[in-house]
Length: 88
Length: 74
View (cartoon, rainbow over the protein chains, first blue to last red):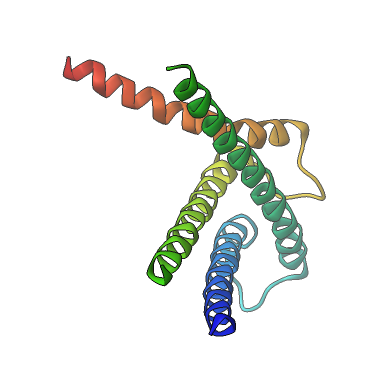
């Protein structure tokens, strides 16, 4: 019974993680297409492919920076809220 | 008791999903604002600084706007 419950929870977490990854890929593609493919031709040029490849690396880097900054901010605000509550 | 466990689990997953959604949103906003040139093999110093500051300034703006609205109402 317990194992079944854990399996359900795990599959929900997996589904949410997959959605998160898909969102990341969709946004990276959107931003990088905008930056790298200025005039869509009959195929991707090698210059465009190089640009896309670099762009993806940079986008993931930006995502990482934003992620860390935001989570740090949430922690900070939670600490501030807790210390204000204690001093009341 | 099992209802409660499921409820807590769902609440936690939803809270986490909201955080992820915000991160995607902020990444898009900050990318548009900070990464102005063609992507290269690393960010320039200016771009890195911009990205590091962006989220905090966006949230500060948001808080500021709320205060402004509250002031208007008074």
